[in-house]
Length: 374
Ligand SMILES: Nc1ncnc2c1ncn2[C@@H]1O[C@H](COP(=O)(O)OP(=O)(O)OP(=O)(O)O)[C@@H](O)[C@H]1O
Image (cartoon, rainbow, N blue to C red):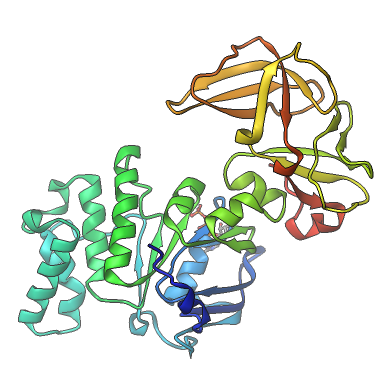
């Protein structure tokens, strides 16, 4: 069930970020960022290391002041509102638990500082510990807990204050892979139950895809695209997003008026249809699962990409095949369902439906995305 029913889309955003820029010396950490986050949304900021994700969270939390631009929450300008007076909570990467305090004391800490009545604190802490499944561990200290349990304590501590907005900086990065998958589900459940808007920062695209209702992709302090996971995957705007969100094969060439993409040294490949003509070099992306692989002696040669299997790996439900193609810098990646029928060293021909190819860059758009290689 979507926590963000269509009717809520008409509401004004919970968070509105307009033209926010933050520089550190010569580094432009945030470069004119505009972003709206809706109430009740699970929103992810996704981007490579150093793109400005943490700085944006710190601006929202009130730990960082933008050089220019504004941030408002529920329509209220946050300029001049100190961090502790914002209805916002930031959960740190390291969880920052007090080692000498029990789980329940860690969770109660923020409420005690607000001088709430003891009975209310006890009640709220007990309720939130039950929500995160830590009632039995209430008396333990952080070092007596597993990584996943520590993460739950940090979440409990953030949720118990009932913020309007919870900011999570790489919340699952300290956990190993299996626990991470479990905690992703847990985070989603908690978000729905607590009814709090979550803004999570991650450099892990799979994590962003599985958690978020919408994702903003950042690179070098700029937002490149804001969309649902499905839209980002299907319609990436630009080469960077195409290469960063899910794996992709990107071919550079010229679109032919008769159809097809003429890739220098390779030949004419199936290209997207209905994109009109674009002068100059363009980049076309084809997802690994859209590519069919066949033995190289398959009939015909038109629109086929010939290469040699470099590597095959089996992942349970699917296989990943890497194919080297002379004149292309990186191997072409193919995902086949089930075990692969080809082995390393086999000459193969690759093909795909033109409709599965997406035009992600033209010379006109290159400057907007910075034209990064992926
Ligand atoms: N206090 C600071 N002083 C100087 N430079 C800073 C400061 N904080 C951040 N930066 C720089 O600003 C840029 C953005 O940093 P930020 O921490 O926001 O990136 P990030 O996307 O969160 O990266 P990561 O995923 O590695 O945490 C980086 O180049 C970083 O070195």
